[in-house]
Image 1: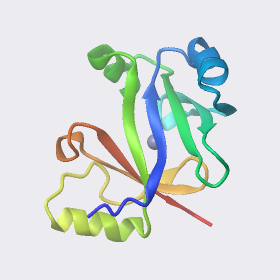
Image 2: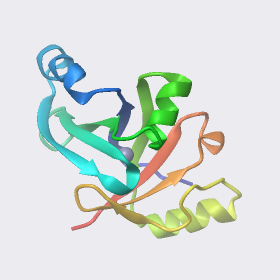
Image 3: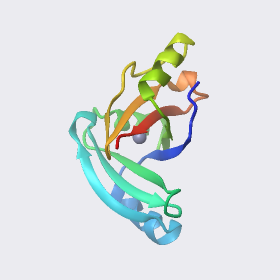
Length: 140
Ligand code: ZN
């Protein structure tokens, strides 16, 4: 079982972070944090936060930096919108082992480093009701 403790963040595919910045800050009321380039994923990520202190959910706007980025492929197929949901879990390695043993299709069989001092792993959308699903374990 995933045993989700909270929604950690939502990944949202966009053609341009700048083009949507005004919506997220001035219409939604999210707080802009920063933008980072993640070279091995071929994306720029714009981080925004919504919610009260202690129960914030982060929004990650994912903008492709090249035509062969996974986000470019997603945008071509599905257009802009929700790309993945990330849930906070305890002991991500154990969760992955349990899910694998239960026959759940995984993209990452072992955790890898994510943004903001986390370990992350993706589950296949065919195994998660059509939504690409990320497990996130915050590290100290
Ligand atoms: Zn994510």
